[in-house]
Length: 299
Length: 272
Image (cartoon, rainbow over all chains, first blue to last red; front, side):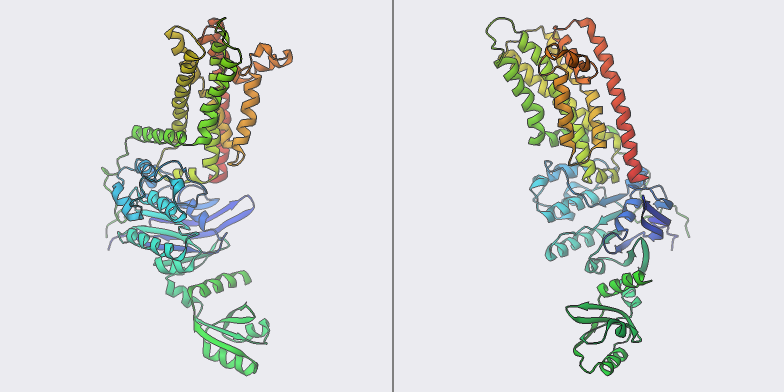
């Protein structure tokens, strides 16, 4: 065993934009190695976290380190790659030209052919960026992020706007990259994406970390069963039942997140003889996530 | 237990950390900046097409070069040349930076190890290169269709004066690029560029403007580039050239300072 310093570290970081607090006292160590997903709703502070780690924003208080250094140092930037949300990429350059340019920024870049293969861009090298489809454009941004052969990769909402098939095939590319022992920080609000890719999920909401663990641990945090039913019981009645951690309504049906399905079901049937459409299922990461962010709001 | 400082998965040796030749980064950045701009019709038509078209119309066709002198076609070669290179600088830097900054592309480049100076230098050099191309085209049109005749040294002097004279306007463009939003930059550039060129006597000689506007022209940077170009082609007395060069350097420094303040303000917004 060797002592392993994290690849990236936030220490008591807060960040405000004017009066808006984007992050509150966040401390986080990432890597080395593995995929960490920052999961949270829009505006939770995910992109701010990435910007701080990339040196594209400075913390209002606290400290940010990348490989033990200021993220703005060229030396740190040579070891990372970043796929950011960008409204427009120069459209008149060809894929080959974009890659060639970004490779020139790094001391020991990946061979161009390996970049095309890793990003699934073979056959598109001669196409202008403006002539690519949405998914192909994201692949080019991914290629720009990996072409420096980085130790750490940042992916900010990499599959936003993808269809299911494109998303799954893009995940393969990300997995291929990670299998070489790198560190990846991924932000997403697709729970399926975090579940599929990440070794560790950090749930962030309203600028604070509200859960941090493996996908299984996150699910366990909200002990795991979901009950759906049509009931005349009020939300207050439902919440009063011991073991109910969250209540939502979906097209007239109540959805309860519960610790133990058996005791709650017994109570439900006892209290409401008209209860119908009863359904009990295992919890998905999505429910865990919603329950976590919801309880935070209630608090 | 080792106490390695940066135990990233594939820590690199010092040799591998060696910087890429910084000159190569600048050259590559500039090469692709030129290619990128040359392929954008919305850039090339106003910056190359319009000056040549205006020159042909107002410098060659309208004066009707009926054999008297070639005064008009020579005069307008100098002033529409200035109009052209100023446009290249304002569109390449002003619109280019505002759009790439405002739409997130600059952030992608800033997150990479690209030196930010390479980004700006590439845009300056691109302006100079496209400026030379424009001037060569305009000189060819002037010589062939406008029967402009000058010693070789004056042709060269004209191209050099117009091209280097574009540098203060690069700084002006950079300031606009950091002050304007991505959607408004093109409109702002046009609103500044066209009236400023007109009032500076680049469309019609400043002497033909109403008297109260003539005094105003001296305060505008394009006036001095137009005059400098007229010095180069021998229409204005060469003795005035130094004054115009000094004015252009002064404006260049002023715009550089404004651009730097705007850059710092923008950095403060994102980095502060």
